[in-house]
Image (spheres, chains in turn red, blue):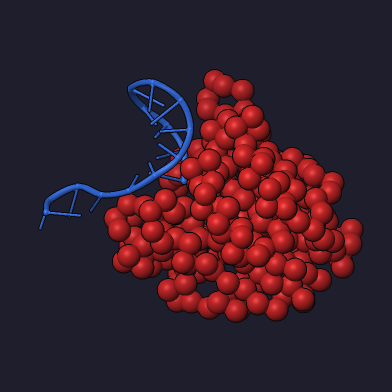
Amino acid sequence: MKIATWNVNSLRARADRLENWLQRSNVDVLAIQETKCKDENFPWELFEKNGYEVAHHGFNQWNGVAIASRVGLDDVERGFAGQPAFGKAGTEPQQEARALAATCGGVRIWSLYVPNGRTLLDPHMPYKLSWLAALRSQASGWLAADPEAQIALLGDWNIAPRDEDVWDIDYFVRESMTHVSAPERAAFQAFEDAGFSDVVRPLRPGPGVYTYWDYTQLRFPRKEGMRIDFVLASPALASRVTDALIDREERKGKGASDHAPVLVELG
DNA sequence: ATGGTCGCGAGGCGA
């Protein structure tokens, strides 16, 4: 079985590329982030005609997560228990469309779009950290309830856990950039401490291996990217991994998402 | 080329 995660940066804008990619990648399950649409604008037929069931969670033009599967799609869950909400001062906090789960081929799949944080001093940064802490708390509970559970936490984590995961760590530190700060890295490490491991890095080690390249500043041709999209697997699932791939080719050309798909093969 | 980007949705925000 082949599972993958991809921040598509708008499903509608990426419909043709996504369809082509589904056909050549041969994935069984795809976790999608940043669909950027509500259900009524979702391209349901794109998935159906290619043999995939699909579940979507999206309120508006922001965020949005989906799971497509051709090995079953059961027990769909929108958001996670205790998922923090966010609202600007004076407005009602909203739980954003950033987490969606389904059981596909015996694996509990989570499609996750972790809040960006924006800047180190922005209110979105404590939101990001509390969001991650709340998810980790839930994920620890799933494993405690069943240590043999096959769980995959896939998505855009908006964290570069190691210095080699950005093209120039000195620049990030000097400019007080997000994604590399100690609290963000600690929030990511907490998942590994809870038993969820990055199953791609051992097979696709850095440096210089990235999943995201900013549209601006010619980041892609300059090979200035970030590794921020991850597949974290529970122990039982991690033991099944036979291969992994970051599809850098998909970042090329006109009309590409700024993220590349990340794939994991299970035996 | 001394700036260099997208997408949504119709001006500015988010990444």
